[in-house]
Image (cartoon, rainbow, N blue to C red):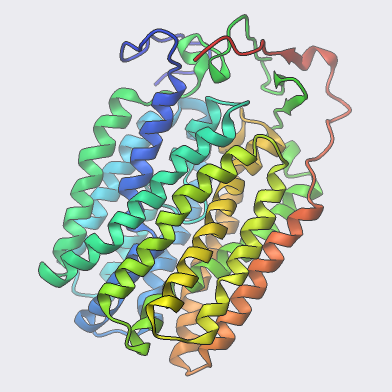
Length: 449
């Protein structure tokens, strides 16, 4: 493990002028893609066959998702601090080994309590955590400032691609080999992709390789206490807040309120969609391809909004995300069983998801800097993850109690609208007055890479 100040050699030779940060982005992309099979969208394909096999109700199975989210939230503060100090390399190796083992272990589960245990262990690994994947978001954001929007968005599109591929693959595997073998295949895929990629290629920060953020040329220095202000391009000033400073700002807590509302409602919708469409009599093939349209749309939306976030305030991306997610509830409320309704929802949802994902990836480093973002994300993750964990079981109980599902969609849409529109009023906090001029530094203009 390497700590701050240790200069390492690049693990692979690069073409002249190529910046190693893009290798970090693509490693993060691969990890996002292969661990997307653990997210609620892909899990929803398994709900009905697992319910039948295990003999449990919708709300009972929903707690498996909740347990995983809660364990991920418990681990997040520790994972965040480890990533800040040592980087995602070794933490990622452990997380990948644990996540893959958990999915493979589902083959042997015949009791819901054992399933809770296995799913809980999978959340401790730090990958595929709904609401903030520290092991893929922090590395990409650490290597970029001026190009952070595109870098984190490219890395994040791995989730969309993985989900778009994972949904039909899961549907195929479940109907041919059964849900148990499907989980085994997904678990082995995590081992085969992440362990070599993180072990060989992942590095913590550009300073560890003796280079600067964004591939800039010229001297770069960071103050010892990590509170330096960096100027990455004309007009862009970034302040590196500590965790203690960040959580003392009202803006931080309003961000948490907006994101927890978003996470709760998103988890509810993602868990309930497939059982809802099954009840309407929509064919499995239509469901699979309709759901694949969601992450497919997310890929392009994330790239678009990631680039826009380099030119416009990040909070506007969050506003767009919440509004479009809210609008996507209309086709569900209309309750049509044709492919038109399903695709209308999925594409609209995907646009909102892409905008919000770009905002979520950028809001912490944009508002509080990059040097302590692991600790800040780790502190905030339990709040968001707990909200996401409650969404699935709450709607499960609502449906089991025969509540009108349209009311669930309406409440979810309202919460998403609130979470987006709240960001209109959430500007970045002002520079701390106590910070001395010595903590201000300039990063030269980009020279290449």
